[in-house]
Amino acid sequence: MNTTDWIVDIALLLIVFRQLREERISKATFIIPIAMITWAASKYLHGIPTAGNDLALVALFTGIGAVFGLFGGLLTRVRTREGHVTIKASAGAAALWVISMGFRLGFAVWSSHASGAAHLTSFSVAHDITSGQAWVTALILMALGEVVVRLGTIAVRAWTLSSHGTRTQSPTLIQSPTLAQSRMLAQRQAEDREFAMEMASRV
Image 1 (cartoon, helix red, strand yellow):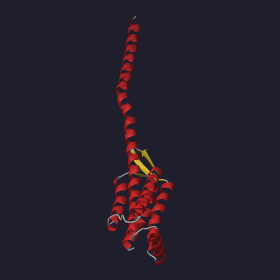
Image 2: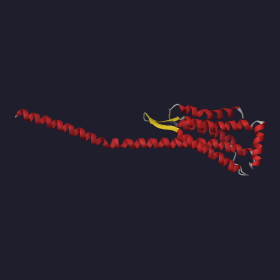
Image 3: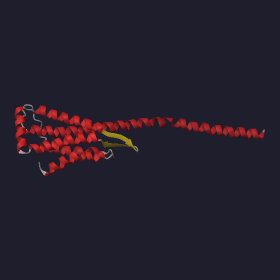
Image 4: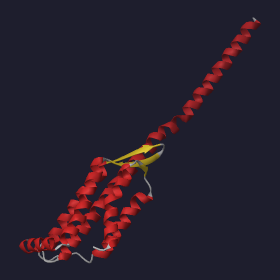
């Protein structure tokens, strides 16, 4: 791993802490993590190995990432505040993110050492995993799956909340003419009372 790899991996690991403080949802909420993981994918993802059990390994890790992303998105608090949709990562959401991204970073560090590489090679041979690229692809797609599913879950929840808020405001708009009519009726009643008092004084 070079310096750039370390920077991107650590940034992905720490990015969720930015959301521990409630913030208004914006384009940056989605663009920053997607840009980071897209850069990593463009650098390390060179096709999907299908020989032996490579594809099964890739599918397993991708599925695990998607599950982490789904629960991370569901555990993130999404609400409306002062007319805007805001998000805040709960402790559970942050823990899931740190565990998954930390696992990827730790795995990369472990496998780069001689003992880790030896154990990984032995495991790969025993389980018919034909290349190191299969592990790289599996880890990248695990991270990609988590990022995309988590952000997608948050986006759907934010859109649903925003749509629900718009619908709940519509009855107020519909009832506005009724309120105006009530005011006109009260004004007419006041005028009628004044007229009746004036007529009574003349009598």
